[in-house]
Amino acid sequence: MAVKIDPFTLTPGVAGKPYIDCGIADEIITNFKSSESSKFVYKITGLRGSGKSVEYGKVLQTLEKDENWLVYPLAAEGSGVTTLISYLSQEDFINEKKTETSIKTSATAEGGIPIISGKGSIEVTKTYAENNVFYDKEATLASMIAKANKKNRNVLVMIDDISRTESTVELLSILGTMFNRGRRVYLVVSGLSKNIEEFFTISKKDPRSETVSKSLSFFRRGDTREVKPLDKFDIANNYEKYLGVDALEAKRLYDMTLGYAYAYQVLGSLYFNKKESETLEDLIPDYERTLFKSYNLDWPELTDKEQDFIRSFYKGKTGKAKDTKAYMSNPDTYNTYKDRLIDKHFFSADKRGYLEPKLPRFDRFIEIWCDE
Image 1: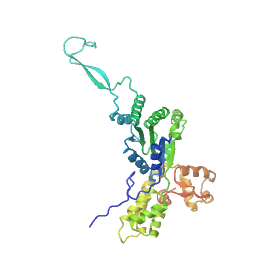
Image 2: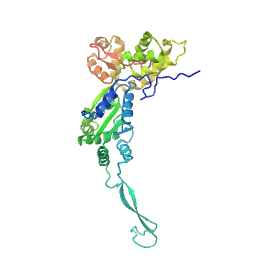
Image 3: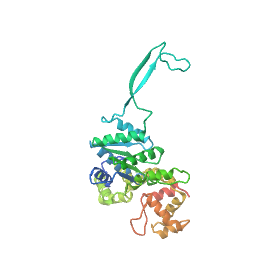
Image 4: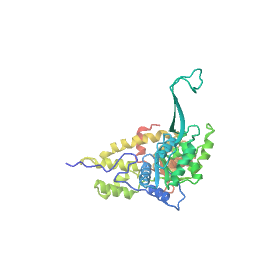
């Protein structure tokens, strides 16, 4: 008996066969490859599980197949500048080695005086090594990128799930100088909005933060693309295609996902692997358990007042402002926290006068696991 292969996947950054294209990767690739475009920086944002890494991965995999592009994905927690220099140094057309003279001797020195002659042998050799005295990371990187451009290569730097560290600030600051000098260097990052905003936050406790914010103005001005909920018709169509269900069942499945990419994959996988005797309702406990593990990462990152707003929203049930305010400890702050939570992708305000949740069964998660 042949084993059925599940087309759905829960692996971050992997699209799988039922991939639904939201167009962000295609927009980035088109602009980067166009001689008429002046876009060099893109930030892909969205909730955990919204599909940021999938769009990021599509850009990476497409452009690294193009011989005109040098694509370097860097770890968010790594040493960005040093790693990028190491990658570039492996290219055939770059040779940053300099000669330096080293003296090896088997003789012994007395009183710390260098031996000019005497017992023992002195061997003078030439070796190839970096010139450590005059080495500077920024100058080295600038030289390497200039050489890449002269070879008609565009340099694309990519960071998935970016956050502010000394290393990422250093890397972005140096890349900023490359843009100013007209180098053909490009940048794509993905990450939570709050993590990207930290690059521009000015803190009284950190006097350097204002300088950092100014040096990264190019990064702030770069295009931001939020991964939106997946199209309901595309989800329903894929459920019909890959699960063999009818249109009504496909819509019921969609309604349980709210278009959230991770939920789409989780529910699709559970349904694909369900027993014949099981119904959609039988899958709900496993569906919730999987989603809740992800939500348990999001919830602690919210402030107490943001959590209060979300609880009030679900208690109000309708999504209308007046019904949410009825449960808030301070209704006058409604607009402040509404805007914050829209920016953090927990809600959308596409329908005038209403807020709509983006996370399916988030109310259940709060009810069960987030006691006030």
